[in-house]
Image (cartoon, rainbow over all chains, first blue to last red; front, side):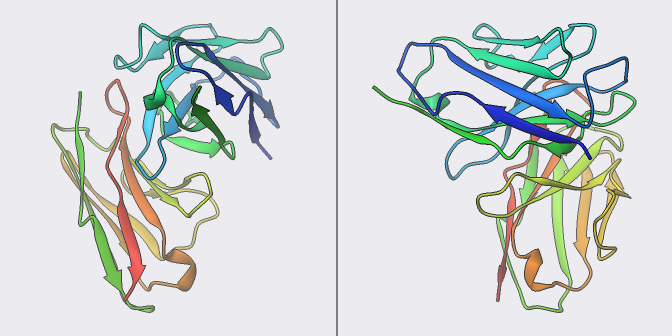
Length: 121
Length: 107
């Protein structure tokens, strides 16, 4: 059974860097055909795809965040991380990690439970 | 950026009735369209991918159809556990984008 779990601080100050980690169990970021993604949801709003990382280390980011966002992969291949710099109140959201589908079809078949992050001084 | 538009924003349905939700893409996404269900305080759950393929473990009352720019999610006979928000998502192009959601509420 594939499970994903987000971890990190629940409160970040404006202008600082948000760092989150997704821990994978029951799978790993291996030589497959799947992307590993970050998605967020501001309070009371819809979903926004942030970006993905592939086992090779290749990444794709949402242009709306591209200059501030970095997604990286741990050497264990069982964790991947998000770093979002220069955060503002607009970055307050529940952040989810999610696995993409097979054959590079990036629907999201497994999700973490989500971690709420508030940007406030 | 490819824009996904869902309608209606809210759908009021009685238990046992059929619900039809729509999703329109600003340009063709082929069949690269997924549907999700989200309940309060929970992560979204994949219902449909490839526009019409049911995800594992979901009831058969959920079905998807369409291609190109027009898509439909049908819930054949609403159960109490189906009252939730439903999102469509295109994965044909980057960035992947979601619709704004349809809330299915009890009539």
